[in-house]
Image (cartoon, rainbow, N blue to C red; front, side, top):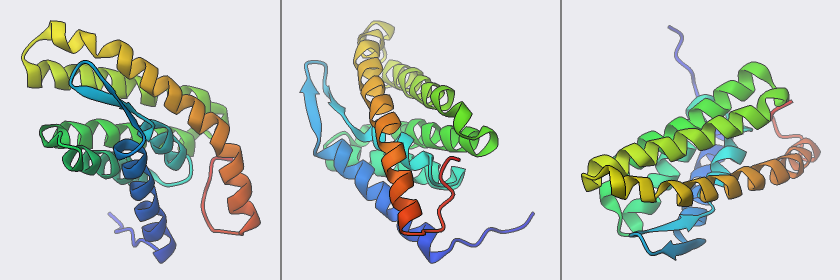
Length: 173
């Protein structure tokens, strides 16, 4: 198996993505009544997953969100968030790399499903109650829907900026 060497540009883009997801999760949030909050992090996970490889999608989604959980007082969600949001970013990036922009709507939709189902299962395990876990589904559907819209609207702008700056980033074609 050939070992991949990351370029400086990829490392910087991954770090930028993690920072943006962290800030959108940690500071742009709306508390809810069920021991949690809505945030805009999913939109930026989907957006960055559109312009990085699957490894970057996993790191940006997983670490950016999981570190925000720790900083925000939800450290017990670190590992579930790392896996759930990491898979969200990985799968979206993988599908877009494999099928191109024609798969964008479906890839983003699958990323949203991964998030909603993943947090249902995590909450069921962590809270020990399926009934409590079910209460989080509408909130997570809303949050992922907002994220979906953010990514759909922002991707053309980001692609145009990358093209103008002539950056060597493989955005969705």
